Every structure is written in C-alpha cells, then in structure tokens.
Image (cartoon, rainbow, N blue to C red; front, side):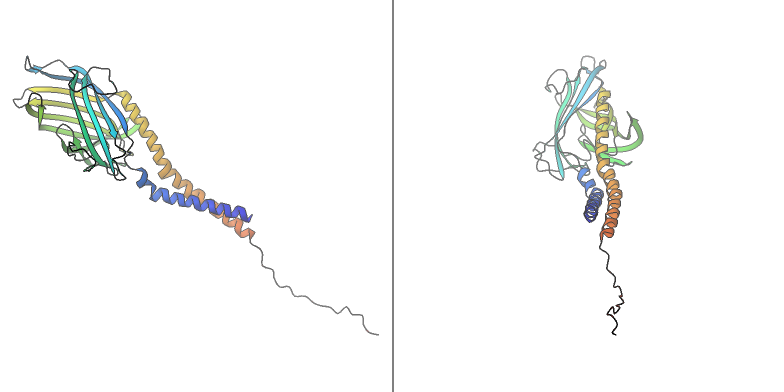
Length: 310
C-alpha cells in the first residue's frame, strides 16, 4: 500500500507540473510562426489588359496565380522567420507547381521577394540574414498573428511596396471554419504600371483576406484590382481568388493545427490539474493508511501467585 501511494503521489505531481507548464510556457513556445514552410498557394480568376493597338482594354481572359513561399530554416532564429516568395499571374487555367519564366509570353506579372517576420507578432522585421536586394517591408505579410483580433492591422501590399490598413470587416464561415475577414482598400496609389515600357500610373485595389483567428493562417483571399496610366487610360482589370481546392486545403491544415494547439493549451492543463489532483489525494490517503500505529502504554496488575505459607 505504501509503494502504491508513493507511485500515485509521484504521478499526480508530474501531471500537475505538466499542467502548469502547458499554461505558462507552452503557449509562447507553440504559438510561433514555423520555420519549415514550403507551400504553394493557387488562385484563379480573369484579367483584361490594355491592347496597345486600340488603346483600350482587351477581352477578359482566364488566369491563374501562384504564390510560392519557402522559409530559410538556417537563416531563421528563435525570434525571426526568414522567407523567400515567388509570385506570378499567368494566362491559362491549368496551374502548375512552379511559375514559368517571367519573360514567357503567358506571364502577366511575376516577382521574387525576400522578407523576415517576427515569429510571435507576424510583423515584418529587419534581418541581417536577408539578401542585399531585399526590399523593406511593413506590417504582416504572409500570415496574421496567433489569436488575431477584430481590429486593424498593417498589411504589406506588394504592388505599392508599402504597408496599408487591413480593417476587420466581419466574421464569415469558410467550409465550416470561422474566419475573420479583413478588408484592404487602395485608391489612386502611384505605381509603375509597366517597367518594361517605362509607364507610370495609378493603382486601385480591394482585397478581402479571410484569416483563421486561432492560428493566424490566411484561409481565403479575393483581389479586385485596376491599374491606370497617367492619362487615365485603364491598363489592367484583374480579379483573383483562392481556388476552392486551395481553400479546402487551408481549412484542413488550420483545423489540424487548432487541434494540436487545443491538446497542448487546453486538454493537457485540464487532465493535469483534475487527474493530477485526484491522484495526489488518492496517494496521500494510501500513505496515511500505511503509517504504523503508535503502541499505547497498557497498565498491568501483577498478582502474587506464590503459594501462601503454612
């Protein structure tokens, strides 16, 4: 009984300690941007661009877009995640795993990007590990922070190269997953419409970004943008959105990550405090019962059994 009591007390203490660790240390350790990212995000839509022969927009054609993001695990650290991203918009409907060469006639646009983010806040940060050609970034880039709030975040817009407001707009269900929808609106932003033709102009854009608030993962995104030359001629009219398959993949990944978070930050503390407490009580009871009883001092009456003398 004593051995069993000690075992129960030891196991109970272990569970309680595990619960304390899960509540205090674990959230900060697990709620951080991973540094083993290797993902391809697929979007589809249509675009109409300027026909230089008529100086008017041509007919809208189907396009797909890829955003290929890879983390540099060696360059990343406990505090900072370093990423490389290649994005492209391509005429066609059959998306591939890689972007075509940017000078391919099917490519509407393409760009490479390097950036680093704080692994806790998801905000972009400076890093000595970035290459010299990396442009400055501001705000969140490829995800929101864990436990995202219904507020306004600064979001990096790759077209203008600046941070813009991503305003919380509403809560919306995406394939069974509750998401926060943040709205980005840009109007008359000066940009280079065509670097090849050296044409300047302006840029209008409306993005809606659907974020899983628990993990900060972007689940869905829509993009409606227009570009104009300085003389007011419209040079591009583009609409893009995550494909349904991409949304389904993102939802499944988010639900898996949420389950892992719940296991560490909710289930373990509950099991630890409740189960550990019960085991401590049971072990203590067994140890008390196993204690040796203290022998009392009994008074004894001695009788003289010597035969009486005659």
